[in-house]
Image (cartoon, rainbow, N blue to C red; front, side, top):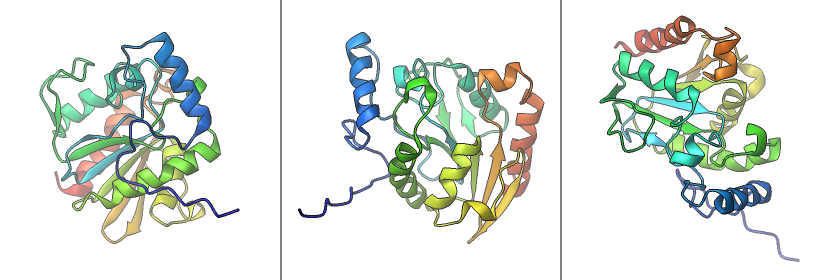
Length: 219
């Protein structure tokens, strides 16, 4: 039997990406239930000349999977986007609607896994399969200087996407890791409703991470 060809990865997956059967099936179910939702791999959002790339876990079912924009329509975006506005990485007004006119300046947001997973839990194999798109996305940002990983899974997916070993860089809130070649990885607990409600992550803690990034980039 001939060996199956490896997929050709681009910075953004096709809207009919077939690579993860479980996620494809779940999206099919959502299309039947909610035909007016986006229900496809969610593209990155932001500035193609970004110096900062923010990497999340995966689209939320009623958030990005519904709206088609990362962190839009669920609680996590209610913390992330106002923070970006406060620190000058966004302009406009955030209304949790992809048509709100909000623009990112020098920043881009993406996810380690582009399709919504059941119970918001991608498998290890799905995360690994989708990593090729993250690798391509990273390679397509010529001015990239900093990456912010929102949560351990984003951290653990970003490192191998850059050809680096996870064991060399330990995840920790507000940790900064020099990756070489002028690139630094910053970590934050994910800005999820659960983390905020349990005070694992406060708004001030989240802002501290962005202060660290801004200082590093001389903003």
